Length: 472
Ligand code: HEM
Image 1 (cartoon, rainbow, N blue to C red):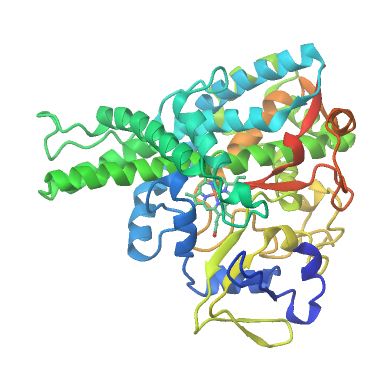
Image 2 (image 1 turned 90 degrees about the vertical axis):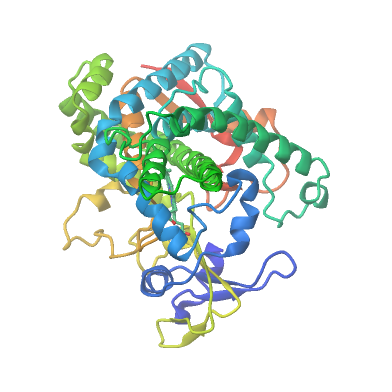
C-alpha cells in the first residue's frame, strides 16, 4: 500500500483499489490534507460492515464502529475514564503490572534463550486495561485468566473475510470456537456486573456511583443509576444496560491492549538498534527518577506526575509510533463527499471505503524529512528546524471527533514500561537465531526491516518479536 501510494504524486497519494471479491472498493489516502478531509472536515460514517466483522469480539454495537447519537451518548459516558489527570492517578496500578512484567523479563534474561516478546507485552497490556476498565487484577501475566484467554482466542479466530487460504477463511470450527469464547467472556462479565448493577433496596434513585471510581464498569453503573433517577426501572432497561456494558467492556479490553503491545515492541526494537538513544533514555531516567534504578518503581508510584516529565522518552515513543503505527482509520464514502487532491481534482468517495493509511502517511517523503530514519529528535526541535513535523502528518491515534479515546493511557503505559525497564535490561532482536529454527520461504524483510508489521487484528511485529534479554 505504501509503495503504491508513491505512484500517485499528482493526486497527493490518493488512489483507488478494487480487490473484488475480497473487499469492497477502497480509496486509499496518505497525506495530511487528504486524511484531514476524510476524518476531520467531513463527517463520514464508520462502516457498519466492520461492526459486523468485529461482532465475535465485541458481541454488539461497539463504541469504535457506532455512529450518530448512539456514539455521541456512549462516548460522553466513558470520556471521564480517560481524562488525563484521572489517568495519572492510575499510574501506581500500571506500575504494579509493569513490576510483574519485569519479573518475567528477569526470568527470560536468566535463561538466556530467544524469547518472543509480543505475547508477553500483550498479556501486560491486557492486565493494565482490565485495571482501568473493570477495576480488578486479572493476573493474566502470571497464569492464564479465563476471560483474557477467551478474548485472545477470539481475536486469533477473527476472520476479516479476506484470507487467501480458503480453509482458514471458512474453517468449520470457527463458529463453535467463537460461540464458546463469547459464552466464557459473558459469563465472567455477568459476575462482575452483578457487583455493580444489582438493584438492591439501598440503591435508591438518588444514590450516585462514587466519582473517584471512573473505571468503565463504574461509569456505566453511574449512567445506569442516572437513568433510574428518571424513573426508568423496568426489566428491559436493566437487560439493555447489561448487554451494552458487556459489549463496551469487551471492546475496551480488545482495543486497549492489542495496539499498545505492538507499540511497546517497536519502541524496544528501535531503541536496541540505536545505542545512542538507549544512552539518552537512561540519562533522562537517572535524572528524573534517581540513579538507583531499583527504586524507580517506588518513586513513580509515589510521584506519578513524574511520568509527564520525560520529553526524550515521549519523543522515542512518538517516533516508534510514526515508523510503525499499529492501526489506521476507515470511513464509509458517500455520494456528497469528495476528497480534493493536490492538483485540485475532486475524487468521489461514493461506494468506497476511505482508508487513511497511517503506515504510508507516516513515511510519505513529501511530508517527512528522512522518513525511514529513526530520529526522536524531530519531536524535540523548534519550528525552524527542517526536522520539525508538519501539522497533521503524525496521526497514529487519529484526529477529529473519532480520535482514539485511549491515547493518553497508551502513552502512559509505554512510558512506564520504558522508565522501569530500560536501565535494567538490554533487549535485542534475535531474528537470525529465530530464523535458523524456523526456516521460511520467500523474502525475510520489508524495506530492510526483518521486524516488519504483520496483520493480527492490529499490526504486530513479525514472528512476535523474537529477542534476547540481558540483565545489566
Ligand atoms: C498505541 C496504542 C493505540 C493506537 C495506535 C490506537 C489507535 C486508534 C485509532 C487510529 C483510532 C481511530 C480509528 C478510526 O478513526 O477509524 C482509535 C480509536 C479508538 N481507540 Fe485507540 N489506539 C491505541 C490504544 C487504545 C487504548 C489503550 C484504548 C483504551 C481503551 C483505545 C480505545 C479506543 C477507542 C474506544 C476508540 C474509538 C473511539 C471513538 O470512535 O469514539 N485505544 N484508536
